[in-house]
Length: 416
Image 1 (tube, rainbow, N blue to C red):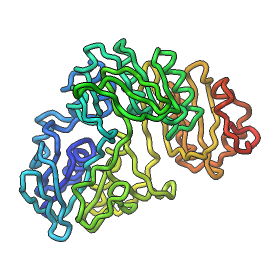
Image 2 (cartoon, rainbow, N blue to C red):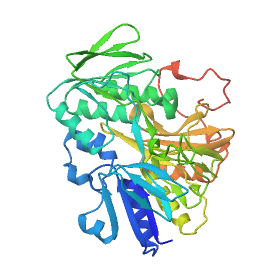
Image 3 (cartoon, rainbow, N blue to C red):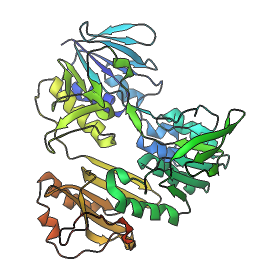
Image 4 (cartoon, one colour):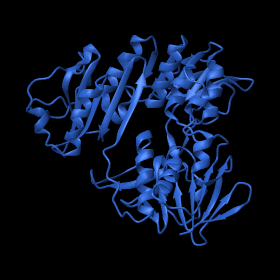
């Protein structure tokens, strides 16, 4: 194995390259990235970079000296356009074809857009250039509408409100971040945003964007109302960046389909947002768009490429920072899971909660409670029975609004 190619030069791709070198592999290494920038961190884009708390340079993951020490052929600003699995070659946008003995795919995801959204004033947020363009637009003091209230949308709304802007958050679901956290945690997130002056329009789909002379002027909702807007941010989720794999023979369904060892085909592995794999810890296939998974899966994929033969079975960890609140979570959060507050009180802005599914603790969440959450993580790691949570005695409700309670039959002592 003389030549390894890594397609994707963000956190996962960089970590895979560093892992190969750290493990002693000294062959020819090529790192291909479609952006011209050196590898940088994405979580700050919707927070510190957007508000101006950080300069763009602070998001860069490695110094030029550290990148040089990799001894890699860096192909930045050269997107991969095709993969020939039989011939073991990756084709680049400029027409060059690069041979490999082994390949790691870490191409991430691509933001979804609305139809007819190619308008001045309409933004998505995935890249550093996206963040800088959006920040420049926000500095003009516009009326902002954020379409989509998942993690990215709520973070962008929080950043814009922190900058003192008029912000409306639109979401077709009844509450923000319903996926993954469910309606009751989503209601608490909604209260957080309202308390900071963000306008919420939840449970209403977007019909279309309105414009004049090629510039967005508003967002028309399904109920017929129109929200005036100078800037619209589309935070509608993302799709795996697998278009370049068409005709390759790989199976890019929801991402590059891999086995438990992150292998998609002999000598071909995937890591990060683009990888779909079977997680033995939970007994299910998953694809995670989380920063920590990008690092952990890249280490696992590179190690298995070198012969570790170790299944990748993590307990996922992710977080979001909004205003003065940090929400952290470990595990998975099925839509039909039971939910119970385990410590603290939501009305005090500090609590933890556990999610149970089929009699087992599968996820835990902390709201400004990092220390308590780290202790709860073991319940997910050890496949603790749900009774370990429900037998702990009474606990406070999540909110005083009983609308968010499930209509399913309740197990005694469980806030479902």
